[in-house]
Image 1 (cartoon, protein in one colour):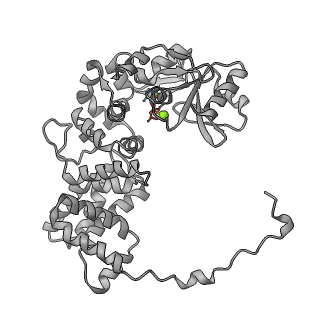
Image 2: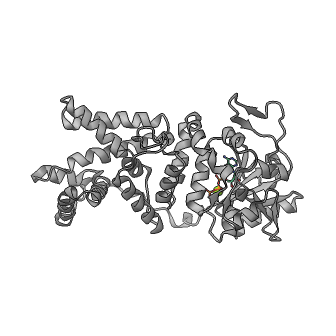
Image 3: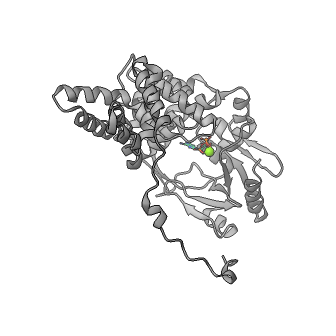
Length: 405
Ligand code: ATP
Ligand code: MG
C-alpha cells in the first residue's frame, strides 16, 4: 500500500469526507501487483479537496480532478460521479457518446459509472475495508472481465472501452464474459470517432507497458487491429490484419526492454508498426521512377499522415520514426567516408537497432547488421568538439550565500 495515497485519504476523512482508493490501483493490489499510480475517490467536491490540500491543482475538462502531490507521489483525487443528468453538466452526443460529464453523485453511482466491474472496487486503506457495489471482487477472484451495465450502451458511450477491454485481457490475464466480448468486433469501427490524440495515449498504454505481444494477439482476436491501423493489410475479417514477422519481433523486443527496465519509445514502436505499409508505398513510388531516397521520404510522409488521421503520433516522435526508416537506406552505404558519416548520424543508433530487428527476422540483412556491429567497435572515439573546452563556467557563488535556497 502506498503510504502517501493513504495519507491523502486520511486527511480527507479527517476533514469529514468519505475517501477511498479506487479503480485500477485496488484491482492491482488485490491481484498482488504493484499499482503504477493511485487514484482516490471522495464525496468532497474539487473545491473542497482544494480546501484540504491548498496546493493541489484542479485539472481536466471532461472530468474535473484534483492532482494532489504528496511527498513526491502524485495522487489523483476525483469526486464521486453520479448518473443523474443535470443541465449542461452531462452532455451526450447523438450517437450516445458522452461529451462532458461533471455531475457528482453518491458512491454507488460512481461505481456503476466505471467501465469494468474489476475496476470499480473501493478500498479504505486505513481500515482495509473493501466496498463492492457491482460484484467486482468475485469477478476478480474468478478472473472475469465484465462491463458494468448494458454492454452496447457502455461501448457506445465511450468506444475507448473496447481497447481497454483488450488491454486488461492482455495485461491481467482476465477473460471477458460473452456479453462483454461478443459485441467488440462489430463495434470496433466506433473508434473512428475518437480523437487521434486520445488514441495515441491508448496505443502507448497498449504497447509500451510490457505486454505488447499479448496485446496484439488480443487485438487480433477481437478484430480491433485495423481500427487502430487502417493501413495494415486486411486478413480475414475486416478488423484483422496480416502482421509481418518484424512487427512481432519488435513487440517481443519492447516487452523484453520493459522487463529489464530499459527505455522504450513511441518512435521505434511506430517505425516497426508501420514498416510494412511504409515499405510498400516506398516501392510503389520507386516504380514511378523516383530516386530511392526521395521515394522513401515521400512514403514516410504519406504513411505518417494517414496514420495520424486515426492515431496521432506527436511530431517529435514522427520525425524520429521517419529517420529510422531513412536510416535503413543510409545503412546500406558501407564504404569509406560515407560509412563514417552514417556512423556519426544522430539517429544511427535507432536505425541500427531497427536493422538488428530486420536481421533477426530475415537472414538477408544479417551481413549488413554484422558490418555495423563491427564498425562501431572499430570506430575511433568521437572527437570532443573544440567549443566544449571554451565554455565559461558560471562564477562560483560566494560562500555565505551557499546555503540559501
Ligand atoms: P491502469 O493499470 O492502466 O492504470 P486503470 O484501471 O487504473 O488501469 P485508468 O485509466 O488509470 O485505468 O483509470 C482509472 C479508473 O477510472 C479505472 O479503473 C476505471 O474505474 C475508471 N475509468 C477509466 N477509464 C474509464 C472509461 N473510459 N470509462 C469508465 N470508467 C473509466
Ligand atoms: Mg490507473
